Length: 101
Image (cartoon, rainbow, N blue to C red; front, side, top):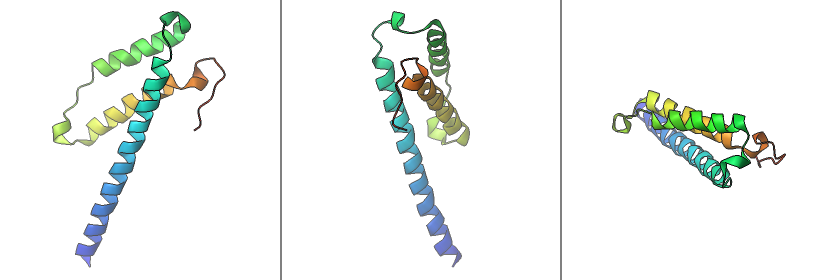
């Protein structure tokens, strides 16, 4: 019985990790689209430019060791992606547009 339960947990782990990765990939894709729609820095407010600069610095300074498969690296990636995604969402840029979320 325990062996069956361990197999079930293994399947749930794999499904959960796949769904989590898909969500992060989607957030990255949406952020990329949002960031690339601005062709010039003049299109952004001063505060928005500072936010983007800060997030860019955080991304450049990330220190990950993916080969180790550590939770702390996943948390760092989640935090970076969430920060970028939150910053890149249209409803926060003053245009009045909202996302489909």
